[in-house]
Amino acid sequence: MARSPKKSFSIMASCRGALLGVAVLSGLINLLYLSGSIFMMEVYDRVLPSRSIPTLVGLSVIIVVLYLFQGLFDMLRGRIFARVGAALDEDLSQQIFHGQLSAPIMGRAEGDGQQPLRDLDQIRAFLAGGGPSALFDLPWMPLYLFMCFAFHPWLGVVALGGACLLVVITVLTEVLTREASKSAVGAALVRNGISDGARRNAEVVHAMGMAQRIGTRWGDANARYLAFQQKTSDVAGGFGALSKVLRMLMQSAVLAVGAYLVIDGQATGGIMIASSILTSRAMAPVELAIGNWKGFVGARQGWRRLKTLLEANARGEDPLRLPAPQAVLSVESAGVGAPGAQKFVIQDVSFELKAGSGVGIIGPSASGKSSLARMLVGVWPTWRGKVRFDGAAIEQWLPEDLGHHIGYLPQDVELFAGTVAQNIARFEPQPKAETVIAAAKAANVHEMILQLPDGYETQVGEAGAALSGGQRQRIALARALYGNPFLVVLDEPNSNLDNDGEQALTTAIMNVRARGGIVVVIAHRPSALAGVDLVLVMGEGRMQSFGPKDEVLSKVLRPVPARNAAEQRSSAVHSLKMVEDLGVAS
Image (cartoon, rainbow, N blue to C red; front, side):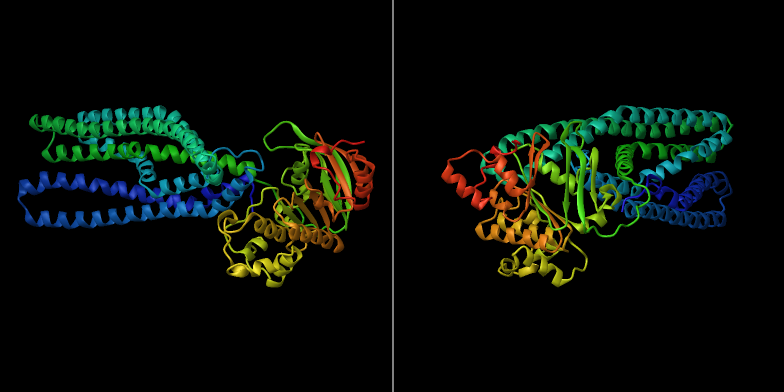
């Protein structure tokens, strides 16, 4: 279930305690990092001059204990980050999935449809890596610089200069990788989109010899992606290497300055060693941050994309649950266009269907028939006018609730990987066997299913690849009839059916009407209209005619010789000409 934007991003508020714990642990870890330099200073300035073995043993025991605590705290910090990533995934994954599912319907599907889930994976992987730890360690850099200044101002100046250079490198890394990273993501979307499209249409690509040309397009997109990736890697890698060299250079510089101060009598050998260690430690978080910058930039861009996706799909409080529709479907001066487009595909459509009605929608290609079907089932929200069930506008229903009362057989039928029974039951967790079988019998597909290798438990494969086109269409019809929905919309339901299948389709339509449901049939073949009593003619996106079947068909039939005309009037439907000759009102 989608949530409001405030709830969608409450994960950071809910993890505030964990992040506070990480901050406390980071403070303890960085304080314990001082123990190594202090230990070295004590060894050089106290143990060696005094040649005291007990002091050395005591210091060694203390440093071992401190290192153990440091390792424990570091492990706990890493585990907390991993669990924050898991909590983020648990809180947002369902919302992201539903947003990803809604994107094509809302006209926002571009390139790789799996990108939102990849973004979530990238954010979770970044949180489980070393990048966030470096970000929490950065605020402690002044502590190490202060310690260097406390030892001697010249030591602090050298360490501060190195730290400033690393900050400049960090800023340059951000500036020079930002655009390349964005471009790399865009190129990846194009590349993956081409790959997914080719995989979905593998048969067409192979049969028509398009593999090499599609492969060339994919190769060009992949080359662009690799070029941007290489640019990002080169910049981040180059600055990462520079930061390592600079850290070692600064450490050696501090050592050299410290040696000079020791010779001049302004510092001890212990201070010289301790300052070198502190300088290295002060620069380590910056170096680690630069090394993880690519992941940081990717996680940041992914979070922005996810935030946009979730905000676009967020909704407020759920509306009051309405009773099941059972009386009338009305369309009031409705108009709609394709998601993301600006032009009406259909407009000014008005009609009313009462329980027990069946309407066939006919018209030439691109007249708006399938668009009207999508509007009736709520896939395309109306831009103007209303679609109402028992007086309630379709927007007043939750999609999950309205879906129980709608059966939809789209023009392009696809089943989901799973069993035949699961597909018919719309993947309900625990469907009743009698309800599944009733839907199969209503579509007259029960006997056909029993002939499959495992009956209702037969795996249909991805997109129903294990079944023929006719079998997929008939099982999809059973899915549309599952649960006795009030409105059943069938878009070219007989495109892959044989004579037995068409007879079963007509029987199914009549049965829906007999139980008080409403059937809408998009027809390109006249036999699909045998079970309806009304006909709606579409033309150029507008309703040209609507009324009783015989009356409307008598107006739109092409003039024919008298002998054939008499036969056509007597059979009403089977004499109907091809849809390309229909769609013009008298």
